[in-house]
Every structure is written in C-alpha cells, then in structure tokens.
Image (cartoon, rainbow over all chains, first blue to last red; front, side, top):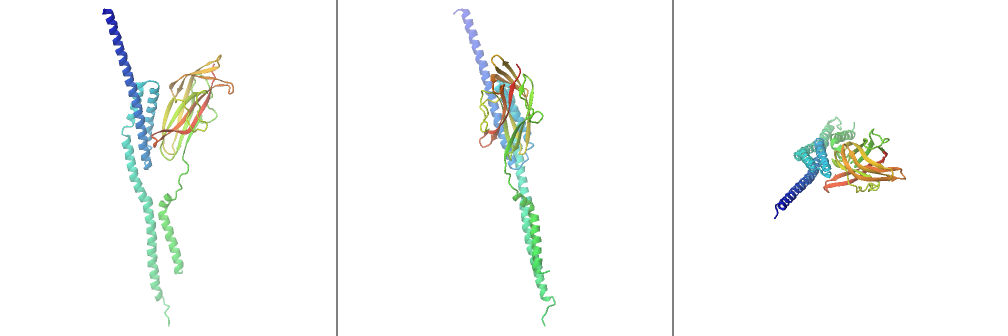
Length: 164
Length: 200
C-alpha cells in the first residue's frame, strides 16, 4: 500500500471517529436535556398535587405557591431552550426547576398534617362543642323546671286554703 | 303569674339560649354552598383599558398588553398559558372556545393561583417582518416576547383585500392541569390580538 494512501485512510478514519464522537455527545446532551425537562415537568405536577392535597385538608398554601411559580418559570425557560436546540441551557433550567422543588413534598405534607389536626380541633370547638352545649342547656332547663315546678306543687297545699 | 304561663316563658328562654349556644355549629351547617366555579381570562391594553390595544404594528417596535387570570374554581389551580402566533392561513382558535388551535405554541407560561387569587402578566412583544409590496405580502422573521426571540420561519401574510391589512394574530390559550388525567387539558378560553403590519 502506498504511504500517501495509508495516511489519507488514517485521516479519514480519524475524522469519521471524531464526527461520530461529536454526534454521540450531541445525542447524549439532547437526550439528557429532554429527560431533565420531562422529569422537571413530572416533579412540578407532583408538587402541585401535594399542595392541592394540603389545601383540601384546609391548609393555607400561600407560602407554597411562590416555590411552584419559580419552578414553573424555570421549566418554561427549559422548554424554550429545548425548542431552540440549546440543550445545555435546557438541562440547566430543568435542573434548577427540580432544585426549587427540593423538600417541597415534606413542607406540603407537614402543612397538610397540621391542617388536619387543626380541623379536628375546629370541628370539636365549633360544631361538636356548641351542639353538646345546646343539648346541655335544654337538659338543664328541663331539670331546673322540674325542680321549680315540684317545689311550687309542694307549696300549694300549705298556702292557707284549708277547708272548714 | 300562672304556672302554665311561667312554664311557656321559661321554655322559650331555654330554647333561645340553646340556639344561641348552638349558633357557631348552625352557621356551618346552614351555609349555602358555592354555586359557581369558573376561571376568568382577560386581555387588557397597557393602560388597563380596552380602548388602546396594539393593532398597527411597526417593525421592531415594542408593544405591551396585560394578560389576566382569576381563579374561582374553589381550589388551588395550575394553569398554563400557551402563546401562539398565526397568519391567516394557519388554523385559528375555535370561535366557540371548545378546542385549542393546532398551531405550535411559541412558549408556555405556568401560573399557580389559589382560590379567589388573581394573576396579571405583562406581555411585551415586537415583530420583525418585511413587506414585499410587489408581491403584496408580509413575511415574518421573528417575534420577541418578553425579551426572548422566537423564529417565525418567514411565515407569510398575504394582503387581505377585505380587511385591508397584512393580518396576523397573537393569541393566548388557557390550559389547566387535571390531576385525574395527570395532564393539561384545554380550559376553553382564549384571548388574542389582531395585528396589522404597516411598515413598507
């Protein structure tokens, strides 16, 4: 084989290898970005469901909403970057969105638990208590009236109206 | 006072006292349930009015509108606004608002609102386009939305002889996350702007 031809073959092989490596890296980057965005999307939906659960239990979710908003903004940015082929940016924004939601579930869960406890106390104080109180007032009224009327009945025979 | 009369007065007083004591519980039991659950979605001009919407659009000039959402659904809601741009040949939003248009969104904006919460977003946009007078058509190069540039792939708007404009439409569709479906569904609301390209 001629030395010139061998060198040309070697260069062609090296170029092919380099192109393959670049293509693989790009594919890997785009795949990573797509996975990160879809994971961020899933986490945000999960976080929303946790917050909604807490709200249904009666928790005040005002303190949770700004975190959801921030994570949502990063996710929107990630999707824009993805649509424009900026995979590194998409990956970074998606990761940032996920970072925002770190510890969110436990915060929502704790708010939900304390809301459930407050709700039990609230039902006891504002529903069960007044209803029992009302029954108590009624029963007390009956008892009082029973005593008063029996005293009045006892007093009647001796009120000076004896026959001759 | 007769015993019978005294008994009547006494038990009326007892009943009144019982009702008074039970009133916190009764107020919960007899509260009328909320009848209407809905979302408001609106678009205002930059002065919070409806008389000065951008219409005649100069090239690369900034225009602003305010997009508003109010949640009256009775619970925390996760909304997504899809921002779309179309020329008159592309699919329009359903006039009855039942279906979203098939146009690919330029961007989506995610908003979380508590019950009775309102959100208002400032949307600033500018259009880079070119009008070919000979061919009587405008071609759109890109749109800048809140500082981000989106390629419009040289979409064409032909001269509309009836409306007498190079018609384009910037519009916003509202979606809501459905926890049961685990996905967004179209919330049957869209607002938009009709735009006329003026720079020759």
